[in-house]
Length: 378
Image 1 (tube, rainbow, N blue to C red):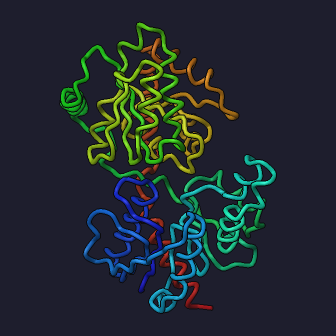
Image 2: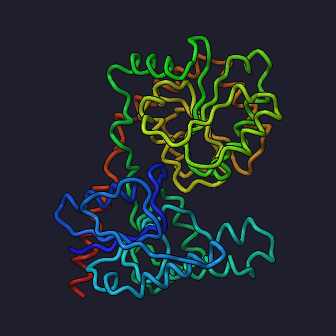
Image 3: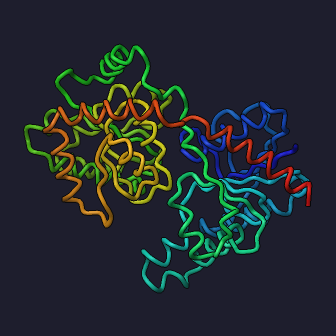
């Protein structure tokens, strides 16, 4: 088939972006032609991709998104494709990869009443409705089961249009046979001493991922613990505001921002604990990555894969509504009970051997081929 794949902006270290790339790579391996429509592609674009860059010039984010949707739908290449697949909510899609949670739920449940009348809210809700409205033809690929109820609640989407994908973790995240050696080498490279505790957070978009919450939790630790903590933040964003917060809370020397990294598997082995107190994270795939790496986790219930942490018994999930004091308490408790941390690690390794964490892109490609067959039969 000729597959039109749509993403607003591709950059190398975003979770949705990496899923998108793996899916189109799997489709290419099966012999399908891939056209990508985006405003920007950062990093090396695969040679098999026919890239169509769409320029947008509107002044606001929501207006640029609406302009992008209009321009993509007006392109003959997009309209002629056998199947139109997107990781962004625009009209005209045959299949949508649900990398984000329901916008309507956030806008109406969490924002002030007047927010729903603002142009930003109206625009994003209209775009979301173009994908999920009852009677529509777009199939939805969910990344966690908890996404479906809100979409059904606001748009009355037919249940048979939803298809749940497996977690989709790269196999290089799995704990290797030489994990101790990998750990030692990476900690030496980062300057982490044997008696220091390395805490890791991974995710682009620091505000959404709760980096400020994590910094406050580190700062709230007893003085003796603070001197032993090394907190590393990996991801794409401007760290200035969060680094300033760390300095203001007198833990600036304990917090390091590494930027986007290609050595995530080694970092997972080097760390003693993953801290991910996200405000809103549709999947938080890094939690599944932590499980297969054997890394204990402290996260919030706002993370899509937080249920996996509970099922694996590989860490602690801070409930909603979020309270900073509870996160602070749980972090101190986990650090003060090394035997429990070891149990979390053992549980994670055992659980990783019983669940399929690796087949997302293959399942997604299977679904896209199935959607094409169903479309051709109509």
